[in-house]
Figure 1 (cartoon, one colour):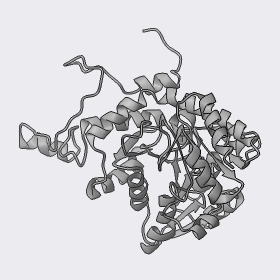
Figure 2 (spheres, one colour):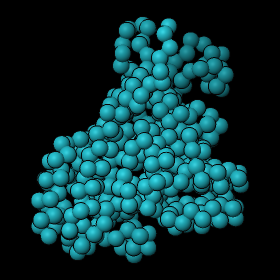
Figure 3 (cartoon, one colour):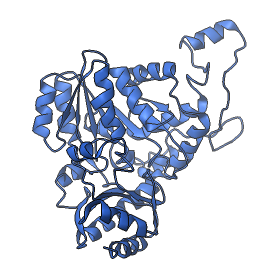
Figure 4 (cartoon, one colour):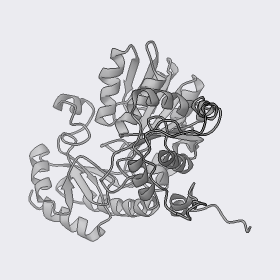
Length: 394
């Protein structure tokens, strides 16, 4: 067989871990709807149940369809293993509960998704976990907090919804020096733009409901990492029952085949929209790592192959201006999601940080005049014209 060069992003998305079913010739992965899986005798059943031989026992534990999705995600992220969940927050919360406990110390940043923020600010402290939340912009303060003692470092980059960028290699090295596990939420970047394990991260997780699914019709989450760490997360997932349904796994397998294509379009459109808005008089500030004046641009350029499909922009006039502009948008749905083929827009007060109070959002550095704007795959010129028309209402 002739050696081929390393496959590109779209080729990887289509072909990694895929195979033709030798029995049927099927190209597409079948959906296995079994609740339980039968064995011809007790010894073979017991061997599979104990993990001594391959096999499935009960769908809460594993399923052939979800296994294929997990294998695909591990291959795309460049990890040894992966395990899947019913939602992104199930992936995040189960990972944190599996790796932390009373007396353990976690370090994270101020700019994280609202549900994640509540895990560190309210839920984990109730279980005796010491949670240290550090200014996202201050890498030196993060390194100092890690050096004081750390069992788990949790990063999100680019952050939701402020689009701040963290140096994964630098902070992972600081965590490794004290024996801490580094967890990176890679939802915004996707494995097409960034693979955090290449920069030292130990665990990569996603709200698969976003770009991985891409069509706004399915919920899920996934955690990727080493065999040992993923098994620790899986062992808890198996008991508390936060796993993924096989029908959902099949939908993700379908969507992943167009991931490279979609992300390429998202990257290009978001760049063009960000550049246009940056010059608009009604816009106070645009946050997008692809802009040269973005504080994290150089870091993003060093660890990202594209700058992603989400940007945010602040309006002169605060929330009244946000409400007026959002009401005028024709090609953007006002909804609490992102990463879809449709453009989605809205303020953090109704999307990423609806769980937080006005004061908590302000403390996290999220202005009330901010709009998170997730570009779809519409024609770029149409989205820009739509934004211009909506902004003219101001």
